[in-house]
Image (cartoon, rainbow, N blue to C red; front, side):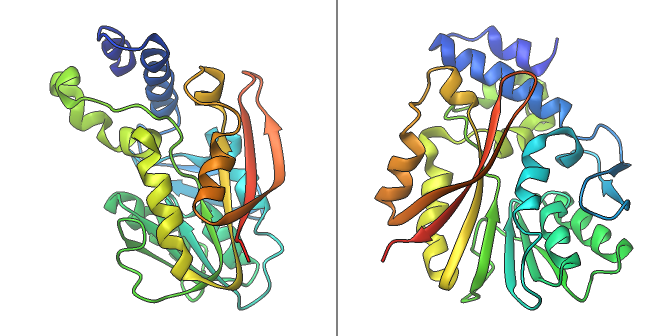
Length: 253
């Protein structure tokens, strides 16, 4: 029985149960089962190393959509790639001349990202560190902060997964954010890490919205409440009618 189907055996809000099933199944399909090299857009035909258990950016439009927004970074600008995974978005920025710091809570992802930087000869422009959001960054400030945070407002319960919990723990951390606490903390803490006129590029998926867990305006409401303006940069729809949108956030003046 898959982890998603096991979750369906639990009780609760039907939309939340469905969201959990879909997110876990999507997470499993987008996470490498074995270490492998993947071809991804914007890296000049070079392949990206994806370690087992790390999010595979070749399997979702969200990653390349976010990466496209940093291709016009100016040489020497400082970029922070939060939730970096393989380092893909930050590595695209580094190839364009940006100075990149990348963060991930998963130490395997950090190792994977640094391995990619080494294999792509970008270690002079890219470095990944293990960090719970901004905790390990001190007073560092950035021109651009990129982020692909979780947008499924559901609480996973370890006891519901019995012996399978450790296998999906990282998937859960990357996909689920009960009450959007991670998003709100990210927006609060990002303020002191943005340079003057700095901006955040945030990629959003409308899965929770389609399932009726949130309204279309919820993201704008949270962003405005935290003191930012929001503007759409780009958007794409998948064959499954899931929409990915990259927004630019700036501190309101």
